[in-house]
Image 1 (cartoon, rainbow, N blue to C red):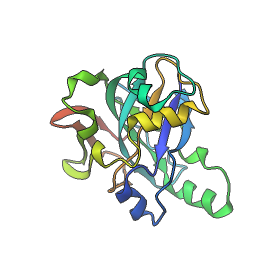
Image 2 (image 1 turned 90 degrees about the vertical axis):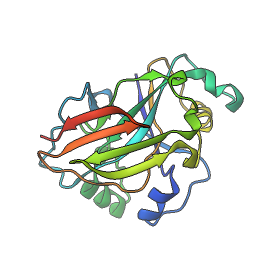
Image 3 (image 1 turned 120 degrees about the horizontal axis):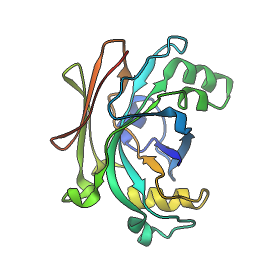
Length: 203
């Protein structure tokens, strides 16, 4: 099982970092040890400095595929979830300044909080899904899949040109604007439409 994350896929998030909108999906990997599941607490690593939340819609791959044509991509995932891509922001900044790889800031233990998954037929239109994140009861991020730079099918097709997708692989599809730091005792709650998918504490 792989955890594949797409970056810079919402223009609002690109703007808050002063970056440029990519011409093709950008992606990186997290190891399976990054998983935090079943609303277990996220244990804040005290040696990494600032750690930010980034809420994202997830899709789960349901069959093996390589070099998938975009028109067939919808048949390669069957379920939707919600996740938080935790990012060690101070570490990322140092890596960028030095021109070093920054997987260390994205792939640390517990850095991929993953919700339950539901069939994509659970929703009327997966290309027009509202999702949000609350921090201590206050909405800090809101997004809609209609605003993605690259939709689910484009993401799947592009990634599969380089990496074979297998059953059970999870794809984080990008975060909207509004990312911020977490602190011990914070509570994070994530929603797709009005349904709660995430609800856990920072320890």
